[in-house]
Length: 117
Image (tube, rainbow, N blue to C red):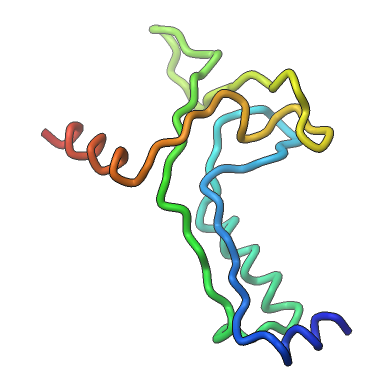
């Protein structure tokens, strides 16, 4: 019922795509939201009856830098383990606030330029 009212009243639905997972219940690893995660979220709105023409995806143009606790010179890392935080957020120890530092889109462009030269 609420969704029907929203469909009639709202011009569009702004859906945020965050660049990292938050409140992780499985392995505490550095991980971003990939294409499939984003599509799954959008499909949930479509399944609730929201028309595709009313969906607007807000994409984050920042990045995250993580310090892997399983990193050593001999490691061939398949994933980057990160420390669970000492202060749980909403009861979850593994969140995007676990020591990840954000950087801007301009910083990301600079990193890419330096790696390409």
